[in-house]
Length: 87
Image (cartoon, rainbow, N blue to C red; front, side, top):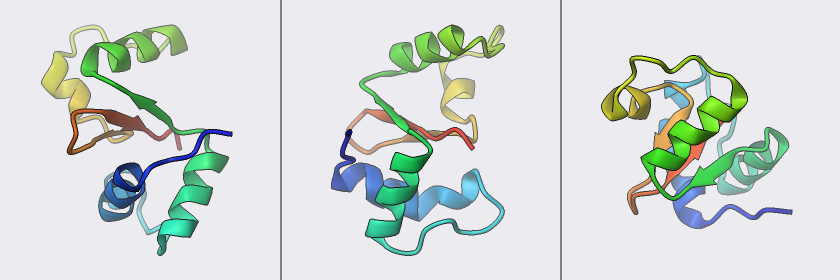
């Protein structure tokens, strides 16, 4: 099972309202469990994010890197990685 590091968990906790109308997690433990349950993915760069969406069949034509970073399900991590949470 993939384990999410503190950066992923903290970033999700702080920014979860960009994707959800109300908080789905209130503690780091709840955030880790939620991310695990929804099989959130971590990617090393925006090119990997783009490839993931293409593989999923998501229409991202016409989206530049900035628009992709602003997608509700994309959480930019402070260390340059990206967390994708499918709701």
